[in-house]
Amino acid sequence: MLTTIIQASENFCIHQIRESHTVSEGITKKRTLIAYIDIEEENSKKHRVYLASDINFMQRISKVFLEEDDSDEETLIDMALETANLIVGSAKVIAEEEQKNPYTIQTPHFLKIDSFDFTYDDSRVIKIENDEMIIAIKEL
Image (cartoon, rainbow, N blue to C red; front, side, top):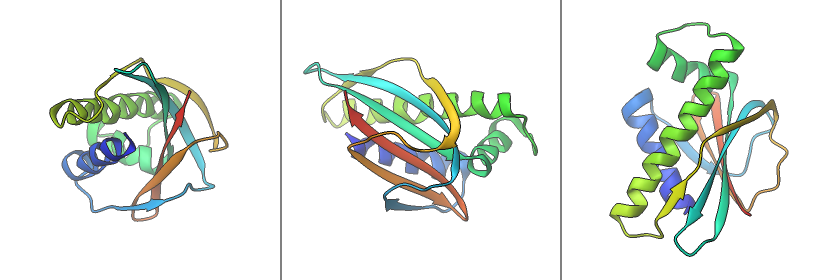
């Protein structure tokens, strides 16, 4: 499942942000905007997908979608929620098309602005220059 979410994240970097990126294992200790979406597989397994991006990563996204060079905190939180929805929604479509464990998604929720300190089963970091976004997944 994380594979399709990472694929959707990479597609997002390529087609929306239009910047080169890298993917690595682990998490970052930076202060991040943390949002999540719960998903449920057809076999009734539930997972929580976290997207935690540093302020600069989310500001890049705000610049792409809103053409804002310096968004306020509320706007960055809204962008974090929308980004989680776009990426996990895209991953859902990829999973359906590839018939790889299709699932349904819930509404995204914002948790906090802080370092990522939640338990998770697997994670990756998407990096554009010095800006980072954590993608982590936890079975519920």
